[in-house]
Image (cartoon, rainbow, N blue to C red; front, top):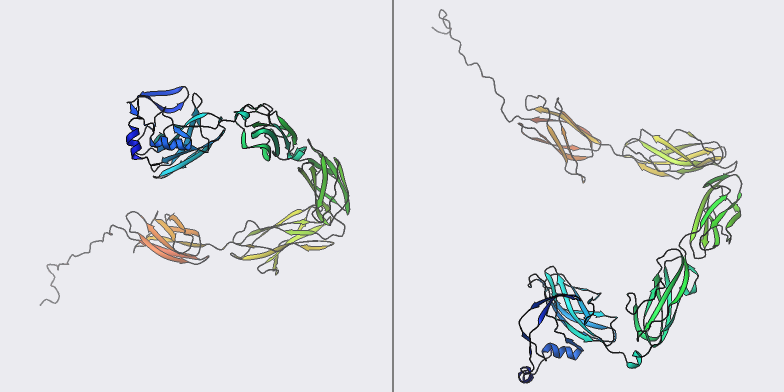
Length: 591
């Protein structure tokens, strides 16, 4: 705040302090919806500190409306103070203010309008958090030159909405020479540097325009409908008499021919005639098919060379190349034809995967594949070892594929517990299909638990034998078991329906199981890893008993748990009767 000289305040302020009785405008000030409430007369100094500061920066307070706040507690609602406008030009300015969020997350924006014009809200918002005063700065553009705007700061949080005092600023006027200028800008556009087609929905628009008073904006559209000065979509640019730039533009009407239009406007508000450029959008790959030697995806032959042919088509662009590759050896050729043929393709023994690609003018690519198996009468089979499956403690299923190369072929698996030392083999089986890859499998049994095995697939025909690569699998480890009986203490009678709880204590993966004893007091807990287990037996009217059992891998242990009844067993009374001598009988040892 700028200091005010005391003598000025004392001598002048009293004379220049009129009083006004006025209506307060409450709520958001949209045109046509104004709520009025009466409040007492107030004095407004013509030279208050706010007036002095605002006049120095080009904006002044506008007192047509009072400061307002949210309907909730002012202690929690934010405090909003409208500040001055700066950097005022013909069509833009920067607004300032101060907000205290009072500890709540607060959203801040500006409202601004021309008298009798529609109320607008700044597109940009800011978020304020904390209890300190925070400076707010937001820029607005696309204003009318030589016009007075009224604005205020708005702050909103969960406790309410507050409005700063309404203030005003006036944009700079256009020079009379510019205002009287009516010549339209002249401009043009080039899409993708003049390309006729593209495979992308985003194109590059090269813009160019000239004007005596200066180009201030451009408007891009896929529609030929001309915009007005105030249409949404104008892009502002720094005023220049010779404007040139390259900007992206998204074509959203799909494949096909698309025309992009552009208009330019100058500082006098003149709008150019439409300039346009067209381009074909093509994002669909060509369609290519293999028809010769077959339309199927696989083919077998005993010839070392073969010709491959087919068709290719594209809806919007011509096919510019046909390129093919062989996975065994690579060859390339270019064709600019829809009915294509690749003669004299040299094949390697075994499977040849031929990939044919058709490309159009904009780079879209279509693909077709065929697998051609070349076999001769003296070719040894091909064997490929596959993965093991369904592995248990003593079982495993081995798999793989064999290509018999046109000759009767047998296959089997070799396996053992050491790499490349195969002590066992699976039963020999015949390969049924002679011209294609044939799946081969075998189920092994009698394996050792918790053991790693090495294996490979072997195939043999009259031309020789072949082995697949070595692979491994590991059988599951053995599981332990704890079983036993629950009996009555001392008497040894079995107890039925006793809850037996088992809990692991040392292993990383804790195990917890619950079983109940049967009518004979027996129980079993299976599938246990090596660990130290606490076993607790409980039953109503019996005391609880606990045992600790250490179980090794694959071990079985039998235990007996004794439970004592909470009611003591009644003892039979002893015979305390003393035998009396008969009346006519003289006791011995009596003299």
